[in-house]
Image 1 (tube, rainbow, N blue to C red):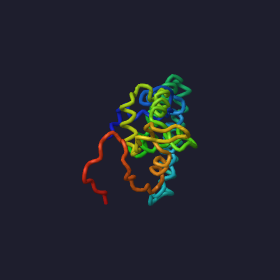
Image 2: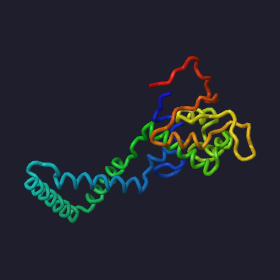
Image 3: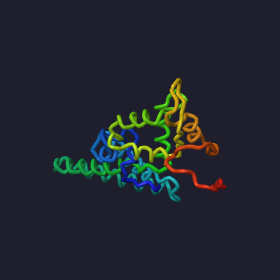
Image 4: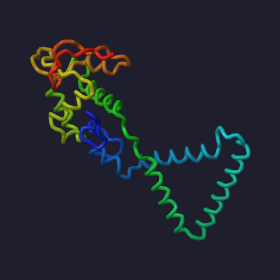
Length: 214
């Protein structure tokens, strides 16, 4: 199942990077943290350009670029004194550039899976596992996943590599489908072990005659 960057199933992380509500929309809002991040990126680019790291004639290049920046700053200062409105326009244009530079980096498929696994692990806590119904309720209680039904949540869990066992024992309760904490920890480890050979319910029956991948 390929991951679509615009699909609602990718909005499972409960806390958006900027703002509140659905992450895809919240990331587009003008938010102080996004403007601040964009400003730091623009400053880093300007600094890297000024110090000219790795340039063959670094000394001359730095001097020339520093002189150009000083001349530009002087021109900007004189223009601001003569035409204060232009300073406001320049500040607005800079804010737009900072907002664009602060755009969140698209999340990769592997990182998204890791976030889902970490979320499930957080919900399990110190218990040996979690029942599927309880996991659905926990996810759907968060704004980012409230619009997802059980089928889509199950598809995300399976796509993240989780094994949905037909019967999980948690304390005195058993006989209900769920996810084991050991499976989540194995997927989050650098070298996860091979999948268990016991019958599981992952939404599809195992293919007959299946062989291990090299």
